[in-house]
Amino acid sequence: MAPAERARRIAYLPQSRPLAWPVRVRDVVALGRFAHGASSGRLRGQDAAAVERALSACDLHTLADRPCDTLSGGELSRTHMARAMAAEAPILLADEPTEALDPLHQHQVLSLIRTYADAGNGALVVLHEAALAARFADRLAWIREGRIVADGPPGETLTPERMADVYGVQAAVRRIEDDWVVAVSGPA
Image 1 (cartoon, rainbow, N blue to C red):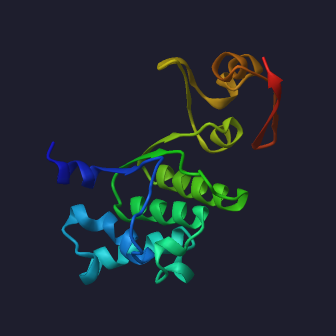
Image 2 (cartoon, one colour; image 1 turned 30 degrees about the vertical axis):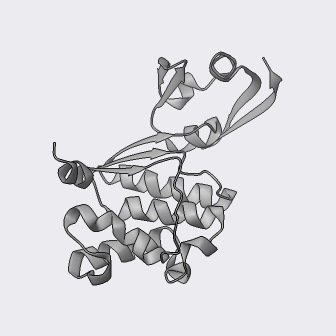
């Protein structure tokens, strides 16, 4: 698959997302449309609409004209999430999308990804926070030393034994209505 075609089909949000220059938030988000042939300075029609939807979804309209080198870590994380969402690709690969986010924005970003998946798209998200993963995911794939050791619904795979096996920690796991609580008490 050609790189441009791959970029139209798969939006990628890497774990490390540094920016080396003071580009505006709106321009970073517009990079999500690059594979569609859009130029960030001349967005029109569906490209401009996709950028606006992504800015709204990630709560960035008030920051849209700010240089990225003035943003907090959480604001920058949301900017990159909006860039990935602006691509409007049918598959999203996100590595630690809640990195540096406060609890409100963690839930907003994961809710956004959940809505994206509920609309018929695919989402593969890497998270180390088991309770957040269980709250928003249909399936959890547990990896230890590069191998999948368990794969299935949160109710079947999120257990104290799994936390000890994968993370090496002693943890209590409880489900309270639609939410999960994972309390780590120390090394296993």
